[in-house]
Image (cartoon, rainbow, N blue to C red):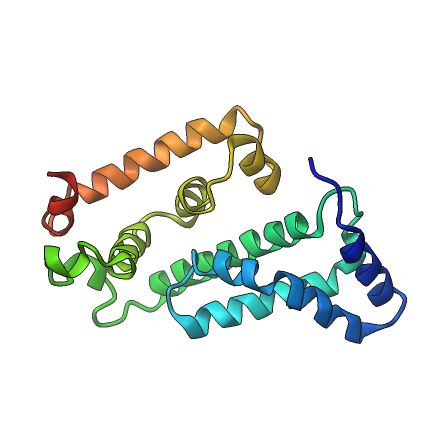
Length: 196
């Protein structure tokens, strides 16, 4: 595992010594990476921004927990992962509690035309995000860590506190669920151009 950056260590020491303004330096150093990570959890720019703020508030409140044995960015990424996961879980509970008109729009949304998505990474990302939203939050999290953040099995195990042997099995099961969803109507039609 890489060592902690001495600049991050110095800034954290300043904050812990009472210089709360120094925390803005950590935000500046790590906000781009955290912002990118939080887009995994929501494509809505306002929600993404709110999640980024939540990550930094959580980091500030628990700054004394960072031991400096690993890079600050790794510790912050773990906070971001759990912040996003809590967001997904909260949305799942809200959907169960208050079924709204059009709540299942992912299943009934009109098919995206092939030419709309082909060559348009943002449109393809939105389509994928909609499909992933149908999975339970724990499965979405695993697939996001593997395919969007491109973390190794060891990194996922470390970030989520799982055994290394359990990660591949859970990823495999999540992929099976996703394939089953993608094979159902109207998803089969929406994704046909990708798999033909």
